[in-house]
Length: 526
Image 1 (cartoon, rainbow, N blue to C red):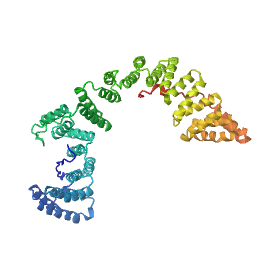
Image 2: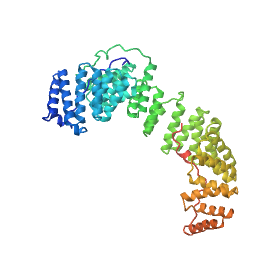
Image 3: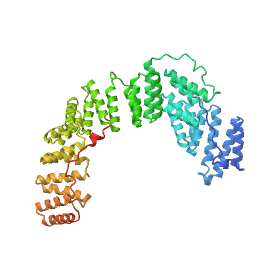
Image 4: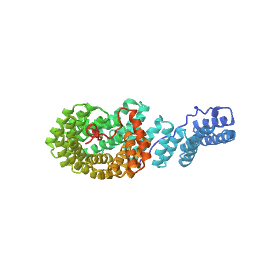
């Protein structure tokens, strides 16, 4: 469908019998409306317009005190006047009447739809799309609006949205051939002839009496397109459908492409991704396996297969798969990073360290690789090595506050309180209400013999948690240290009372927060 092709759409008559009984009453309004409707039905449009205008006058006179109650009736009459003008090809005047209808009753779907039809005739495509969308907001099940919107999107070359609304139109009217026919035309224009013929045949099956707008379209000698262009069309359409979250339709397009070209490995890979997101693990694995070793997506496919096996608790199989892939691709750092995580899961820390060390060599600018290596060093008691690895991770990802927090805590364990303060202050700038960060900053200042700086942090902790035993104890000690004996003793008395009321003190920072979630739940990396 060319951008210059005129859309052929017909205006709709409103459903006048629902909520508009006053139009049929024996009043001036009802009489004028009935006369206008009879003239309209016999195509005497000039007479119909005059009668409908008389009905409008009656609405305004009779409904002056009930303007809101008569809004629906006014909208219906405006639509009929607009239709009468449209059938006389006065689309500019019809457009004004449709505008009046939508302003009178924004919930009248036919008013918005006919407004869109007028915009298409006047070649205002964007305005038409907006009007058809408004019609669907008023009535999501209006077949004509879905079909018209699909035609507009097809003309605007927005193939994903066009496909979606054609599909919705088919769902609303299973026996309608027209949306299927235009879907076939859309595929045919891109060279996807097998898929186009499938839709043409489906159109004839559901509506044998359907006469296509262009009867020769199915048999016309098609424009020759290269396989590359046709394949690009399949990908473009499937990606557009995915972005609109129509995974089922995207899967159907990928399936059609693979039926035509079984060796289209990118389609296997993307379809595997689509199935994996739906937790259809076995189907996803089957498509990932179809990606051969010589394809550029082989490593990524193997890593995703490993992630699925890991989710299925098949850790050893997941590791063996990556190991075999690493033998073929020894310079792929992400493989060693994922292997390290799996080795950690299998309780093989020394082997995990070697895998992470190799990952760091291959991925020197990857903060996660440096962090995980530092994590394993810390687990094995090599704190100085862990410090070096975490410093590098923080330098590479200065916005990663959780990494900075762990680096600061390791400084505390090593007694480098001044360095710890520097890290925790940056953490606090991003997480000002974090209880643990405030508490440990207070500890650092106390250890640096700066009780005046420590006191505000402990007080902030106690405002959030009055039963924080360690904060009570350290706050009391700080006040004693600066000579405020009365306050110091008061906090220590509260600490004693709290200790007598429970078995053990609160020590939320007795151990470092290990981020094992980076090792156990990072299933989508790569």
